[in-house]
Length: 84
Image (cartoon, rainbow, N blue to C red; front, side):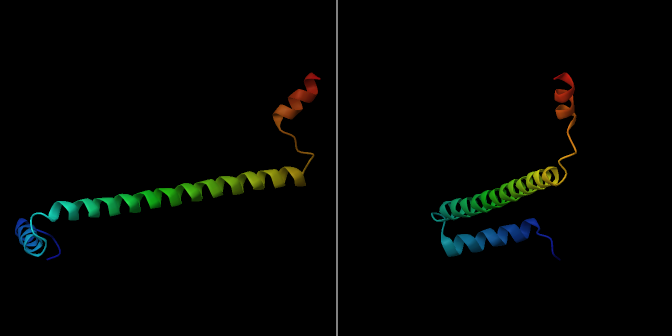
């Protein structure tokens, strides 16, 4: 009952042709395509902003951890001190 068959698609196409006419259907399709593309771009932008904020937050946490515990040194710092 919830599935579209070929007859459903044909009836829907006929109704669209009656309401909008054959000359306006391409413009309607283009506007729907642009709307979908804009929605996807907005979703990607939101996802990128979330990823950036999470990276910023994790880097701030690392900096605060290093500031709280100055005795902990990275292996690079230890190597530099040993080589000096």
